[in-house]
Image (cartoon, rainbow, N blue to C red; front, side, top):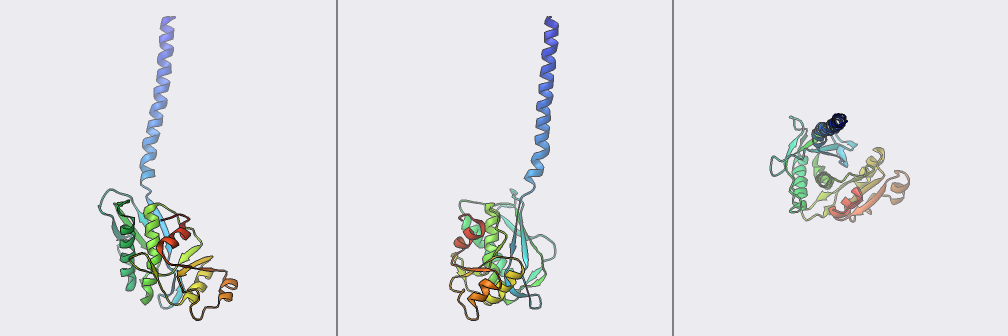
Length: 227
């Protein structure tokens, strides 16, 4: 009887050990793939004319690997060939610097943030109007907040967080409607800019135009969370 009990006990221990080992192996298999995903944010750029004056919305895809190196966070193009030239290059660097400085010292991001463009060529002289969108995209990526899909923004960026004026708001509203957006955020005071028909914007384009003064205000609308 004693030998039989010992055998049963060993068998039970063996099954428990095998089960525990299986769970551990499962964790080892799952952990690396989950950690390697990183974060991704897609941000539309509301520009009325680009690439031979074609109206539309170029898109940037931002990817952060959340790595420990390099330190501090490095910004690079996701492909070897740089797809953007002209004013857009300065706007990208400006928005990136603002986002990193705005989140310091509570957040010290490291690793590599890769930038992919769904278009090629210069952003035209209006490249600075993408700064507010880029800044919000970088901030959302680093904080881990998803963007609401049917909202877009146009505006320049002041380093104190204010959103500066842009041109061709009416044209950008039309472009937003074609692209399927329901809300277009514009700088404070620009909803009533010349040549904008308030009735046609709300009825014909089905786009709600909202004024915003700061990145903080726009961020809360575009993510549903406070910055």
